[in-house]
Image (cartoon, rainbow, N blue to C red; front, side, top):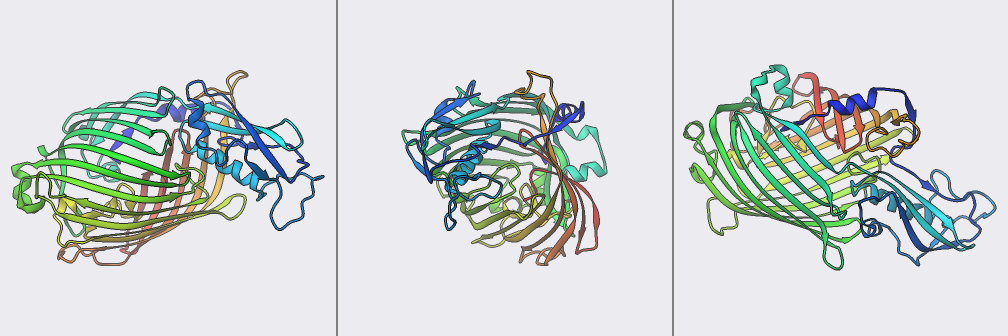
Length: 493
């Protein structure tokens, strides 16, 4: 975890005052009975969108105005004198309304989304969308650890190892879901970065554009591993990197996506780092200049992207680092596949699994460019204090979880129900997990956990709340005989 966000105010809001159980992020509301086998959605009304433009919501619907939707379950005789909608109902109307509501939640523009049907006639209804918008702009302090990672820092806390700065973002510019952000850090390490994202442009609203510019000057650098322990250099100007990137996002269908990511990267290492590892960068050089192209396709039907409980994600990708344009310093090629599966097995029980395989076409990649199974979203739990790097990596993570405290919302005073903070929600999930991984490094001689099948298992609690915040508390055992308590940030799978 590179940046520690200041979230104390969230905890104070969540845990102060009395609490009242409610639906986490809204619901579908339909009449008790529908007397026709098909109904037509003749129009759409939207309330609660003080800033967001209506077209941003309408494009997420799984049906269009004028569509006729079946109110009965296929293969079953319709009984229109009875309530048609209930938990588990698989009628076309229920399913497509549910998909539409999940799509709206996944825009990350709204705290809650409620869908209603307003009767016009026996077969004609208007869809009413009631949303509660998020707070869109933020300004808060951030800190970067001049340490290998958060869990290692916790074992030897040194406050001088923090570089401090500010982060600003606006996540719904012009009410069009445009996003801009800037971050600046100063201290032993310092950095500045700017990003701007236009989610969808053009007549068909099927192409998005993201632009990024960043510069960093790192005090702390992992330059090698010994017995799978990180070998660290601590020194001013150890590594400097300048990056320019542009990303195109394609969305040919509601659940189908593709990205094309072009990145220009210039990195320079200090004399001290070069003496420690002359093969840290490609070509045994102190500087590398590269132009890289990343492309992927993915299908995403998850009900909630920040903490899904049902649905699937399938992604295939390629990454060419060094195109031979402007410079031939780097020439590496990576490819892989990533699959996530989520399922509700009862009212409070859920399962989740993921599998990822990534390979490189070359051999003996320089240390800076090696695949890393202990970083960002590529990890197996319990190995936070080790480094696992190589030319290929294969791993899976598996969870079975129990809804310990169902989604709740802090009780608020009358008239504050739509407050973006007073109605802050949260949930806790108890989970048992089992992970497995394997890193291929044909050239290692001093890292016993490379080229070895690794396992971990344990118990954890996930704290989930608004604004995509997930904090994990986990106790893990490993196949190498270690165990311990670890913090994690972001969803486990």
